[in-house]
Image (cartoon, rainbow, N blue to C red):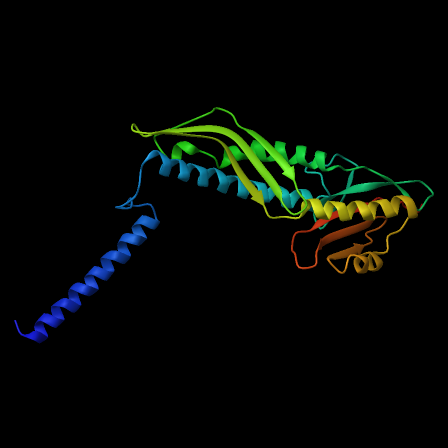
Length: 252
């Protein structure tokens, strides 16, 4: 075979090899075939279990973290405790005082929001946690226990859920899985309480003065859907919004 023929053959073999490598990675990525060099020991499997649980915590947690902020700190507001605004149930955080411009602070607490989030997230985790889909070597507890801790700039989730992986050679156990949601619920709650307190004491809130006093860290929108006042609060550079309403009085 002459040199030109050999060169052509090498080029063809190179192209085929590249195609096979690309095909291999595509099939592995789509879980059609297992990785050739994959580690299936207990530690590697537990790492996959941990990622699986954390992904679920992140997905479900963000869903309810967004919802509770949009609804003024309550996931399931009771009848007559909210107003509809853009198809969202926005909770009143200050009750109307008949004949007065001031209102009565409803006293929403961080603890209440943590309890609301704990129950909702804990119940919904069953929609996406199934460690038995991750590995055949897994044994897990029948129940889990979630702790929610609202920080100033995050919501920390800690799930007590004992899981054991036994691959026949090694046994690895993990009791707790943690995830942190990067949302400033605690900080925006503090701002909402500043607004509510001004309405409760003064009967009004000066948003421009407040924003300037905080060096424009926050953007506060104020709306007046009759007869109420509705606020939307977010970090100036953020997209996470906490909104709530001040109950007004209808003029008869």
